[in-house]
Length: 463
Image (cartoon, rainbow, N blue to C red; front, side, top):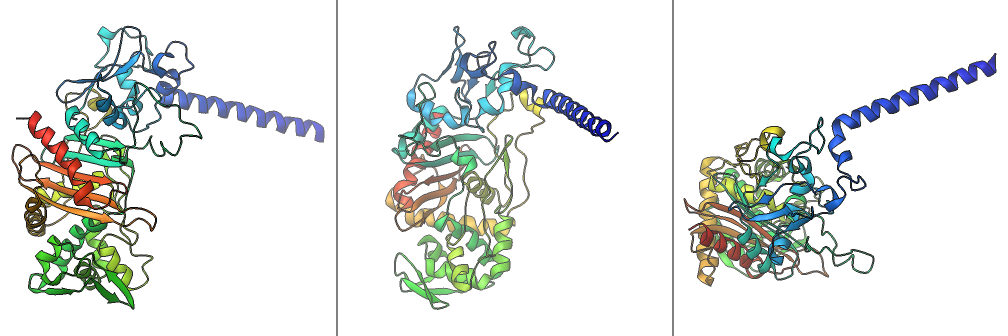
């Protein structure tokens, strides 16, 4: 009897496992059928790793960035630098860049249907082409300006939400992809990551934009204050250091000259609670989504801060602060829009796949700053551009602009990361931008040329 019972239980377990497998197969068939059908081991789609029937990808001016030729080979833009500049947004045949258009929207590109598979005649498909808001020439200009350095550059129209430049390095040529192995993996470390969307960096002095906003809202007499900078300041028995000894300076000048001593004192006076509240309001510790891609979070927390010294360092963009480039552009766009951000997007409104995916472009997000605070931050960033950048001959396509550079310390054996963030004040060219150059040194030397090159290319192409 015990043997019969044991066998019955065994048969029951096997039966339940079988039906569980059937249910799992059915679930995956319904939810992941597109990915199954387009695997490279499927002989019908093996060419170009499942992209043999994919439609064209074009930029905002109709320039073809990727298409399938008569031999069912996936080919990319004729210019190598343009291909490299747009690798992370367009993608390649490997599909290793998960956030790229060819990876995320492969089903739409190939016209795949659950009922018809890939066999639906092209004439009966909805659209299998994807139009991007990107300007290919400006992306190429940004890529070349990086000069072989790693980092990210993003520029978007803060009125409409259209992303015009999205460049991430390191990169490679999708038309001639490298064989990455143990010998060269250091050279291509992080190459499959779109740094614009999926990376966060120590912000350095660009975080003073947030600290300035916190000071404006929480220190009533901030514009009457003066700060004394000798090049260092003692907090809790430990020094806050500054690049220069600025002497006695006011609030506006301390921002323009990026005084660490002044901003560390402001952060301590504002206090942990209000600093975190302001940073969160301005998008830190929040999730943003751009055309279906979740951004890497920008992070500001004082949970691990041991006293006022570390709160001071956090106020100048060090300690545990992290900033995502796309979020920094969104934040600058919000400042330009009197406190209200417009969500960026790279899929043009003409794409039919937007309807299929339920994506709506140009959503206004939650207010980041009050209009009054935003206008005061605008004044600070404008004064900084006038004092520090224009005086040194830095221009952005001959447009008026408001900005802040940053030099972020990332380790004793490394050069600092270089930042440049801001926006242009022009009705025809309302651009918010963020550039980070890994181990670039000073922002004014390494990051501003990238923004200059890209914005100049945009202005020239849109005249």
